[in-house]
Image (tube, rainbow, N blue to C red; front, side, top):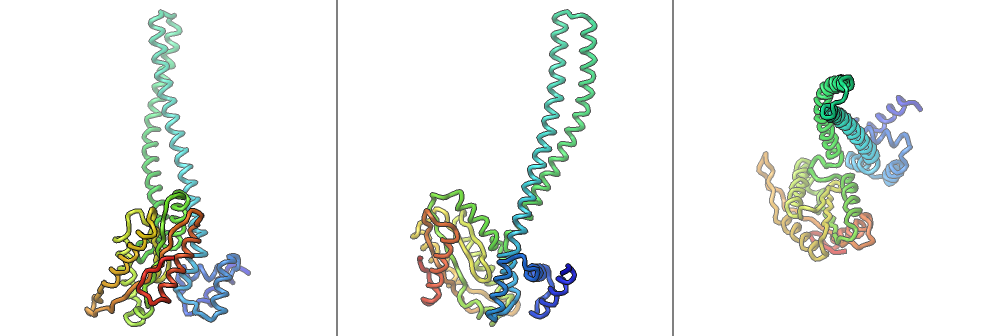
Length: 330
């Protein structure tokens, strides 16, 4: 099937499910229809077979789980290659600079020796001629040095741009926290570098969030999510890794925290959210109080992040089924 055929099928599929043809929607559906991304195909088929809505929230989840990751890894690899290329270029230029300068110093030393030893005039003239050539080469080297400085500035700008793009690819636009992909990248890094250090994971979910959206609209729902994210950032330690896992769910990794400390932090967050009061800006309407449920799991030495998350998520489920607005330890 040609690319144009896939394009038409993608647009038809989006129209069938009342989705706009914005880039993320188009990309996910196009990947699904091509069938090469087996995990994406399986997840979409399961969704459709269960009769659940194929909506924008589901498409975004599919993008972050099965599409964005490959693009991010490719981009990250490209950035590392460019860093190595630039680093090698700059080092070569510096080596050329050192070589030319060393050549001139050597000739100066040799001429001084010739003068001390009263060597024949012819040899001295040869050395002087060589020195002139070295001086001319050094003048060229000064131009090279200026070019080097320019190259270093451009390299720094490129590094900054690469870092900006990397951060944007792993950051949730609504809250400024890590997104799901960023969470996986950062937490894998933490687990690989702090294997013997205790840690705990909080999985948090806003209770009855659908009711908030249905009652006040998605704009207020977004405000609620942002406020919860802000409070999380303000109440967890500076070395914590916080992420918006998706929708109204958040994850916080607490390196170095004992189970007791993690439970206390969870209770502090829960109580603060319970006391939070919001007012809709345009009409001063008071938003009904809302709560969160939290599951907590302590890391064992053999834990991978997936295992730790699975236990914390099970504790969150127990908190939900146990009445909500509570913190449950795994």
